[in-house]
Every structure is written in structure tokens, then in C-alpha cells.
Image (cartoon, rainbow, N blue to C red; front, side, top):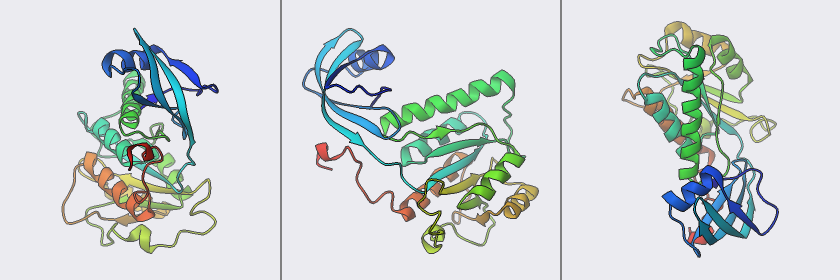
Length: 260
């Protein structure tokens, strides 16, 4: 999958720049091969390669796709993690289908995003999401939000259709929570519908954070009998929620060409 925005209106176009270079020199596409191009906002072109030059690929449009954004949106608030675990979480969250990843400076986060260092770290998250979206052939690419602290997180929780904070000592299991809870009819599938999953850092949520999240309206739930790494917990939680929403039931909108 390659990125191009805006998508061309005609039946032929040339993929140039970094995307063209990747298609021609890394992927080594040849005339007659299929290639998909998207703007990352639900619109895509199924194409055939008709010509290749150095750093450029000529494409003929065979089909246009315009996919509606899935509802409700699934958002993961991911606590900052040491080493490359944050980027690893972003990569996997993108692959499974999350709509937004929000970096969160939790009380027990070892890593702190400050100044230029923080800006570079967020850019790495965004770049990771972009590459993972291409690899997984997503038409709607996830948003990587701005870093939030306690106040902004509480506001996001309060505004969500359903907010769940993950805690290994919670009595309520996440499995079955979305399936068993009737989302409000006016918010469950509307443009503003949002399910928010809050993932703590290594060491988990601080007691005061769990209390604040409850007060803001979040349900506190556990994943299972084991304690997962912060880079894994959000992926597992999102997978459960996406499956219970039915978003894993349908094939991808660009899979019929492959017989999927």
C-alpha cells in the first residue's frame, strides 16, 4: 500500500517522490503488477503498474474505493514506556485496527517527553503508525494524538461513549464488557461515538490515577489472569473490543481482488 494525497481524478498517474522510489527500487514493481494507493482517509485506488522508471511508477486506475470510517472509534491511551516499547505498541495497535493512539504521561512512566526530545518521540510514533498502516493495507490511518496529562485524560474519559481503564486487580473482566453493554443509541454509531481504552505504564496505574479515572466516568477492568507488558496490554484489549464490535467479522474492502 502506498500513500498519495490528494488522489488523482484521472485514470492514469505517476507515483513519484519517496513513495515512487520505494515502489520502483525497494518493492521493484514491474508492469502488469497490482498496486494499491490510499490517501489514508478511506479513499483508495486499485491500480496496475504500466511503466517503471528510476524512482517513478506509472499506474493505471482499475477501481476506486471510498470506505466509510468505522464507528464507534476505538482509541487507546498508551502510557509512555521505556526503550522502544511505545513504538512497538503503536505498530501493533495500528495493525489490529485502532483509530487513534494517545500518548499519556502517567505517574509511573519512566520516560518523559519534554521539549524537542518529546517532539521527536511523538514524530517517531507517528512515523511508526504510518508505516504500519501501509503494511497492513489500512484505508483509514490512525491518528497519533498529542501528549496528555491527568487533566486532559480526564476530559477525554468524560467525553467518551465508553471508557475503560485497564487494571490487573480489577474484578470486572474486559472480555464481554462491550458485547454485554448496550451503547447509547444516539452515541453508539454516531460521528462522535468513541470507546477509550487507558493503558498504564510499567508498574501499572497509581492508586490516585485509578480513582481519578473512575471519577471521570471510566470503568476499571482487567484483561485476564496474567500481567501483560504495557506494549502488549493495549493490543490485547483493543483486539477484544474490536472483535466484540464486529469489526473483525468483515473482510477488507480491497480483498476481493485476492478472492478474500
